[in-house]
Length: 89
Length: 515
Image 1 (cartoon, rainbow over the protein chains, first blue to last red):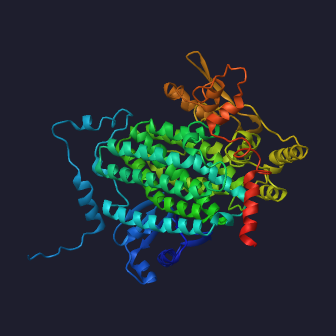
Image 2 (cartoon, chains in turn orange, red):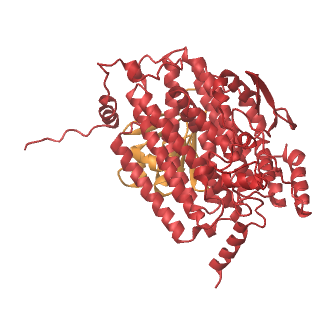
Image 3 (spheres, rainbow over the protein chains, first blue to last red):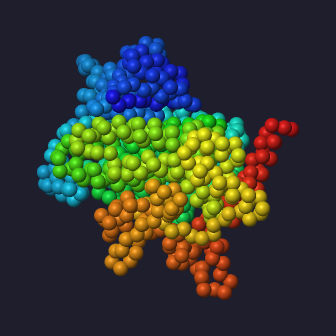
């Protein structure tokens, strides 16, 4: 199964986002690089608004991800609740 | 007034109402006259409503987040400059990566903005138009923020002053310029494959992630901040490129071979442009992040591989150049730096020989190739430099008619033989760096015969300022060329060892740490 990844700038908000991703995607793996977090998962990754809000302790609009994103891979499907990345193969 | 606030709209509804819903079909002119560039490339679109908009971004949301990015960026740039941040970089060699960056990239961002503005006018579907329009605005933002961030270095260091004119004149910048010139003179769908897909999706990770991490590793907070700020837009650009490819492939099976040919062409053109990035990663960053080979494996082989597996369901195969780029990943950065080192006299940046410790790092990262092919050459050059006769190449290079790279890369299966291809077209001979570039030429020779290649033009006497008379008895060709290129001999060019930049940096750093 092909790998999915997101890369986020390091910072307080990103740390909460990354913790939420790792909670919600059991196969997700976190890599730490200078100034960057890279999270990978096989085939599919779900980024959930509610989980991020739990980690950050404040309301969060998924569009706000755009402030911290550095790179991603896979097809994107975004709604109010979830930002989903996936490969079909 | 008795008004009841309605339920807050969801992302999808808001997006539909504020973008797609603003579209209309023309009545007093046929649609194909209003959008005249939609059919000549052979791409067949049956229903623009099938276009998917993954980010569902509306104009108001776009401005809100872009404004926030700008505020963060400029706060960091101000702080960096106020704190004399330039003296905190690992060593002054690092600043040469910024010289190559500003000479190449901001002008390309501007070309990208022009390209996306054009495509956002040409696309006959509302979803595609708005996404391309937002990308055009992003590209202008990148152009501006890159110049603002790097401008502080121009107050202190040589070689950063002339990028506006240099991009279309200086011999080593034409390779990257020609990539964008080729793309914006193509049709709208080919442009989307060239920039949106090949450049943004397949290759941008190899440009910005190493650059941003490289800046972070080497103490350059200004470049790191603009890199992050630009890169936060790239995720959206990559997704647009991928959506556009899927849309074309799903609309009609006749589109598949056309798209495949563009993928083959533009992945190769992009791979050629990345030789310069490899050189920066392996030779120019005093503190390395990872080797170019490692970056190629993660971002091209693994991530690009995942993408091509995914597209296989449409009948798309990996680009034709795939195997060659994998073989060349062990060679390309070394050959690029050897090329730059021997011609640093004609650059608006400095080059240098790797130290013994740096060569050991290269040996460990390139166990199959560095000691066998490249270390002996660097050791010879060091010996020559020590004896006062450095290996300076004072000739003008021959460049590839398509990618405009200096012809100095080797045969894919023999790293000791120069790779040179040629073809005849209407009585003229044209030269190429590779089979792939020759094939691109042979498909559209009328386009590529028009290439304006700086070194070839210089030899034809077309690169002097107005009023210069090459037949005058006291004519100095080198001085006239340097004048045209905007290079101040002895300050901007040559070996880093002994340069004004090296002396100044060391003196200023002492001043910053002592009384």
